[in-house]
Image (cartoon, rainbow, N blue to C red):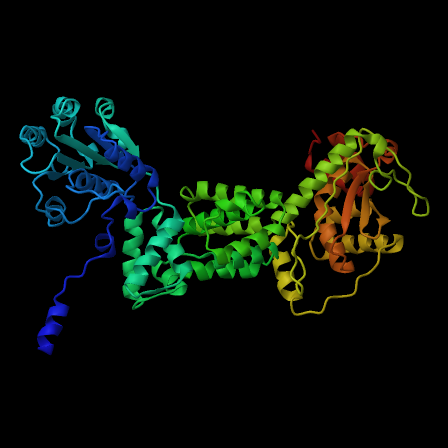
Length: 587
């Protein structure tokens, strides 16, 4: 007997949750209360239409509601709450799929004119048992145009005992003449919380230990489709042997959870480019594509932006454990940073498919995010400088100054030719033991310097004064000539003057238009050089052209070829004998 019982248990057919727990009454339908309430009121008040059209996304209960409606309107003794009793002969025959009054037609495989003609021919016969004959036509948009036309007359004026329930996922493909003959019910996507609650009830009945975070991630992945959510739940429960926890769910669904993006955003805010790239490699090794990463970043920054306002925070579709983290991170970030980050990621998403080197495309996006704070600081400073130029009467003394001797006090002066170029870099959030990385012309050199500095003790800060400023400029000129091989730049630097303005600001003064151009091009290199020598992280260098010195500078004369030759002969007389001996002409 024991062996026979075991064989009987093993031979029991497994039924997936989507079928086993399919709603049988209006009350058990999940997330479509606006539909079920209307249908129950229509049944209660005897205001049944002859044709219904149920439309909406897949897996939201269209066919289920059609079956419940067909069962309820034919029930011999409905409950006071307008539900099918489940005990009468009509209900029992429906449960056994033996009802002769309810017909289900799949329009995807019965889409021809002949199929519709056979259906309309069948409509002519009255029901033998019960009040109505109900025809449920699923995927009705698959009918051909000629089949729709053959169906029009019957749909518009059916017999009093015939009711048609059409279901479709693509309402726009149905002819307007069909739509005008139906009562249309639009089904919505099921909310995440409703799916989580329904799955929790099923897990309790099936003795499956499920974490709320795991159910939430499944509901998010299903995108409002209950059938997909239940299918994933069954698959993961089988994979984890009835233990539906968050870690196994994330692993089985192969998705990047919010914890990865929290870790990534912390590295980006700390300007830790090395760890950011290593984390990218780790994620790519797990099999994720670049577009998945970018899409996840878009959702992450969107959630951060929503968390900036209590009213918008209600739109967050994340587990309760993650909401607290989003609130904390959003409070520490300005909205301008989050919006700029969203713009960078969105631009990267749009160009991802057209990129030839997609990994490099994602890496460039992460690099731009790492140095976004520097760009925002420079943009803000440029805006402030522009506004001050428009209002010269309120310009501070340390913004625009004329050239003076080292012993003189700088005096304010505003001229049309004054050019001011500034950089201000203040970190929003900085790692406690790492020196910040600056976005400069030699980016690769900066990254190597940062890696070397991680194993060194932070050097002592050298305070600025006039003497230190002059020595810094001289050392920088030697650096350009000896280490960079830029002799011309070194000569131009020798013509400039580096003045002390404040403990964190220096001014580089040029003496001519050409000299000013070199000053602008070399400013960033000079700034990096001075920061390295003084260890002042928030050092600024402004560039100024002394228009008085430019006017006093003698203008260069353009010499002709013969004048150039005569000048060369003065330094080397043998050139004239060589020209005459060879019979050469200067022209």
